[in-house]
Image 1 (cartoon, rainbow, N blue to C red):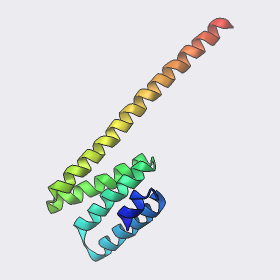
Image 2 (cartoon, helix red, strand yellow; image 1 turned 180 degrees about the vertical axis):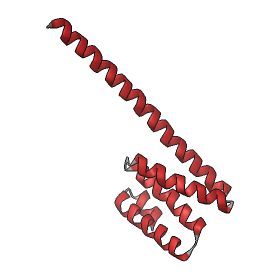
Image 3 (cartoon, rainbow, N blue to C red; image 1 turned 120 degrees about the vertical axis):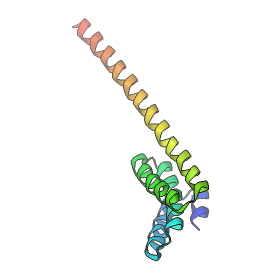
Image 4 (tube, rainbow, N blue to C red; image 1 turned 120 degrees about the horizontal axis):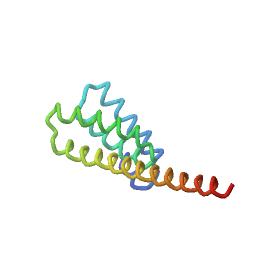
Length: 113
C-alpha cells in the first residue's frame, strides 16, 4: 500500500504508512525490513522538502543495512544521501549568491544616499 500511495502522489498517506511500517518492524525486531522502510520514508520526506529529516532517516537506515550485510539496499541509500549533499551544496551556493546580491544592493543604496 505504501508504494501505491507514493506512486499516486499521496505523500501524506505514504509517510504515515512508512512510519507505521518502521514502528512495526522495529517492535518485531526485523532490523533489515525496518531499515528498508526507513529508506522509503526518507524518499517521502525528501519529496516533502524535509531535508534534515530525510538525512537522519537515511543515515539510520544505512548504518543498519551495512550492519546486516544488505549492501544492495545500502548502495541505494548512499545514492539518496548524495542527493542531500547536492541539495545542501546548491542551497549554500544560492545563499551565497543572495548574500552577494544583497551586499551589492546595500552598496548601491549607500552610494545613492
